[in-house]
Image (cartoon, rainbow, N blue to C red; front, top):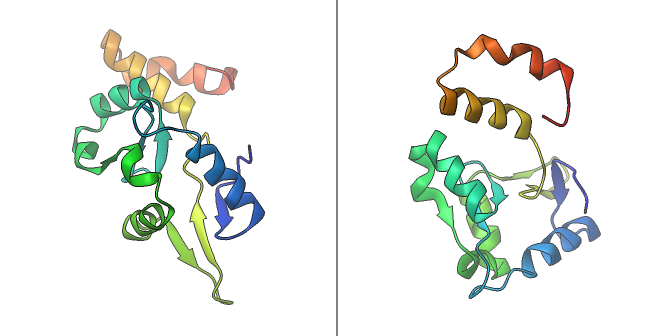
Length: 130
């Protein structure tokens, strides 16, 4: 899967990304799209996400919405996840990208263990896998 930040709508990369999303079945999928962050999350990731960003709860999009491509693109446009370049080509932010996971993990640990922010600063620079 492509981990690019933006994909041209109707490009092969976009189609591949959307095929991955389409593999989620509306009745069995627990994957959730946070329209505020424009990021696809598992049920448990989203549950943890809402612990930090309670105001994102109204922006929760389930598979019934994002499985229909027109609704998916409409939601992306409304969420500001689509931009148009000078040539008129539309680009969408990739909701499957992996960005900021380490930072979220650090925030989670800080909240869970009630630790001051600067305690984990060394971890930010030591390991990309943390």
